[in-house]
Length: 70
Image (cartoon, rainbow, N blue to C red):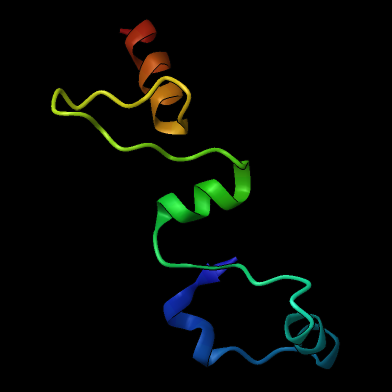
């Protein structure tokens, strides 16, 4: 996984280029939140008006752990 802004600068082995052309993998991401979803399969989450994240999101799980530690 790499930032999408770096895709144009890649120098890849031939077998990797072939896998990309066959859509075997294509993981460029624009944001940390996209990367979190690619790596975990869960949405990062967006805060509500009270800055609380959904409980089933990664950021929600982190927020809950931080609340328990304080």
